[in-house]
Length: 149
Length: 152
Image (cartoon, rainbow over all chains, first blue to last red; front, side, top):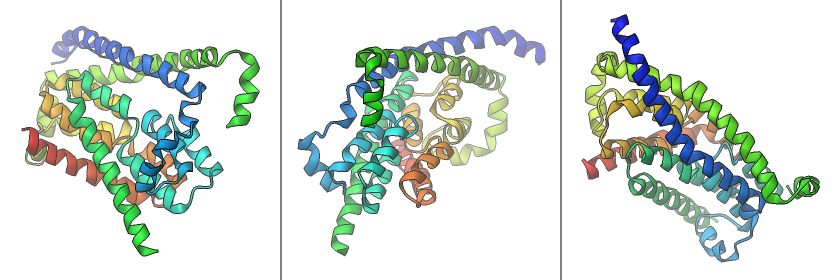
């Protein structure tokens, strides 16, 4: 048994290295892209045209930067922008909740999807349901909030 | 935020700073792959090809079949929810799953992953982070179940 396991070790290690190389090939360019976008303030632009869409999901203009940071960078890597900007912009509690609900359902969309596409999954079926659910849940919350006022 | 930008401005153009930061992060990421993900893949591969994982997880068959997944995929869900998606990838890779099964796993775990680490961030936004973590698990498993019905 043990001898059999040891004889399988080199093959397993080789396949593991191939997986690591695939992950690196996908994620390293993403890291460079994210850092470039961050350095040029892509996540900090006011993108005025998106305002009406933001209102539908219960966010004011101040919610856009943290939303973009979360959706593209993710909760952990985007946490710096996400938390500091939502404090600076003085987001209302309802906006913070909308942001949290949207982002727990749908964040780091490029990286998370890519990992399972590497294994052979369908990008559409992995990503589209998350987007639809995030939009649906926050829009529903926002409508409920307005009808209460 | 703006103070941080002006303070670092004299060091060079933005792209150069970004490249420097990417190099640092990239190196850390490569180490993370070699130190964490490679050994996890090797362990998973050995557990799968020796048949041990199938033996241990056999009793989960009726539950996992709800998602059209083999019982071994329970280990993928645990790795993804408790550790992160890279760990899930390393555990899933040796399992020889169909694209439908990978997509179901990707959807469940896309919604519900790194639950403990990310709850720390969510907590900064809302005191209801417990409820949101539960929401992620329920949404993830629910959406995965529906997707399994659609694809399989």
